[in-house]
Length: 235
Image (tube, rainbow, N blue to C red; front, side, top):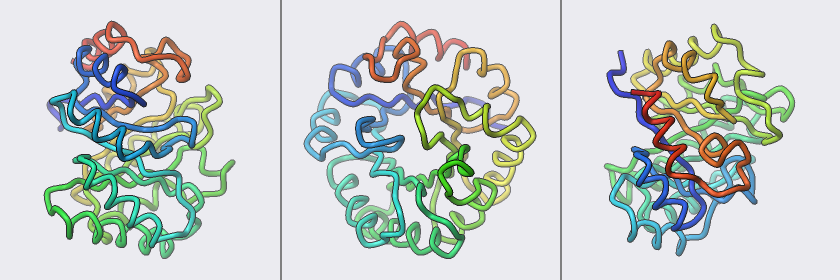
């Protein structure tokens, strides 16, 4: 059983990162919402945020189609820039073979640079509407590729939550499959305050958010008081 669920908050600039840390976020996850669900930010933004926060830093490298070389190069850039967690989204990946090729390339790139870096592979709860690989297939592939964490997020950010696409049994199964494969598990995807009680029952290692701590609109700024409220609910 996970004794202390970690809160991952996704800022897009230094001011938001400071608010996230001030509110009690455990992981500061640098992203660029303008480029998608797991949109990549710029290396210099990652470096600047790294110089302003003390908590572990994560960075998204994009919602990927089948481009293992591009993904592995982006992953290395995020690692060099200072991210401890490197997150890659399997947005336009349609098979276990494609997922393995991309993830193993990312893992090799990151771990060759620093074996202590953590690779996070993300599937999408709304996989049917975007045509991507099923979340249930990810844990086994991610383990084979050498990843450390598997995640489920929403690919389209239109206000619909992961809970609108995956019912509780499917999410419980995803968490269990991750743990059975020796991986940590993260749940994300337009999570709402009303979802927290359900998430706690599922016992993931990490919960990833942005919109909920921006007041419900992910295009607004992260507010420290909302991060603090969410952190208190998780504890």
